[in-house]
Length: 270
Image (cartoon, rainbow, N blue to C red; front, side):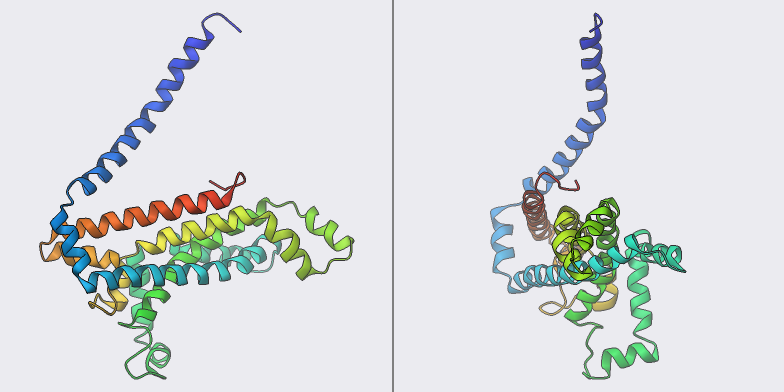
């Protein structure tokens, strides 16, 4: 080892760590600012409000259900896009990325306009007069699914792309059919990507605000979820209660991320 190489490497590592340390300090300062402003009175006020408790419950229920739907669609879609090439593959693959790059508010506007077409009105109010989606909890699930599914497809497809095709070829050579190969060989080997896809999709869904507000409004006790609760509480000047809800979202998000990271194991995508 050349003389002076260790001090050089240490100084260089410190130089590299500078931006990371600055960013981490910023994150810690922001989170500490939220928790530091919460008062016992605000906590009591928030947890006595049945509408706020309903918003927490509805947020968790809709986000989990939407994530489950997103993963169920993303697994076969990601596998098909990773293993097959067909006419229009590039166009379809690009179209699936639109919800990732488009502002969520634009997607919400598109959904709202769709439900004002003849087909949309029939789907929304053809069976139930008061509507199934517009200004209804099911509409929250629909909007969350549309936005979150694209993230799940992209991450899960990356897992299939990274899996050597020879695993499947060997399994089928030994007598396994396509379904057996998919469920017993492919899915276990891409499990970390499935977990990562679920996490990323849920993280995007859980904090979704604009599209939900456009399509479903924010009716207390009906379509209010935690992000819209923060908007409502700030708009009427109850900053302390908004901070309590924000702190709850931070805690729920951190707990979910830790749990999923632990489930992902050593092969975790992140």
